[in-house]
Image 1 (tube, rainbow, N blue to C red):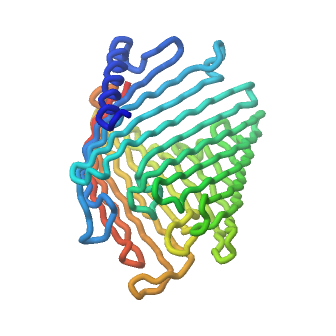
Image 2 (tube, one colour):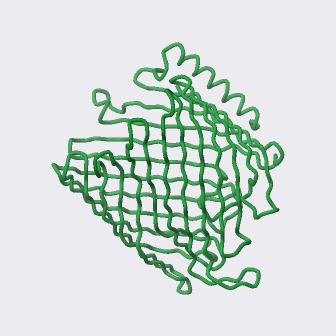
Image 3 (tube, rainbow, N blue to C red):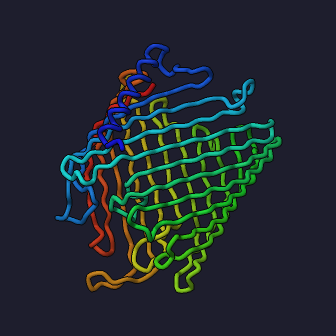
Length: 395
């Protein structure tokens, strides 16, 4: 079986071959028939002063080198209807090396594929799949580097006639942990969305989600069902403002009668505002519930709001800064260090960085990020500083 270094050497050799082909045929123009190939490589050097997100005076720091080798492709599926039937895919392999904590070294895999099928001017079908083999924490609650696989697949059948549209969708999410087996689960989500296009670039819609969460081992976490109803607007919301806004109500019922059910107001916001010719603002936020791993709590309620600013300082030099605040609330009282209360976590995250587009096919990045969590139980407090430099080659 090939080892870690052998896989990386083979990956580099393959990338060099594709790179040479790209230089021969032109940047972003490597074709094999109607198949378009786009190789990419990224090398990142990071210093993290709290790699396990531990409390004060217990932090472990390390230098981490990440090498990413990837390939994107795009191809038509039916000759003569290239724009109506297309397949896109992207795969990357990430070699992550810790300088001191070498037992944390790992190889991540990411694969994304989507097929857009436009049968008529009224009917289209979209199919997608996203595979991730990683160990990064999947949410704000977890901190340990638990190895896991997450696969998300979905299909959406859409119908649009003049100003009225209807989408019928299904999504399946699978979480499979190497050691944290109590969190292995399936989540099935069915979505029905009705649209009204009151302008060529703007739609009002109503959305209904029905979901089921099924754990492989539900001795710790309870299986559940939820219903969510939301209204929203997407597209051009106002002059210079585009994106998606939706809000509604969600109710989750847990099979275990001793578990508290969730019901409450939910929102999702992701909009972009073109402040000036060289400045773009991205406002994002969300309110809802997420499955919990803490004590007897089966969920926590979260409220999140943030802002990202992308500003062109000079020709090809961009300033990128962003930050968010998140509040997590837990429904059950627990006891930590002789204190009994309902846990609440406040999370702040902010970063500032520069991106320099040296060429069309290469850019340089440098970034500083600060993150902290203040909990009602101080055993869950942490602070983390990350300093990162990165070079990206895109073809």
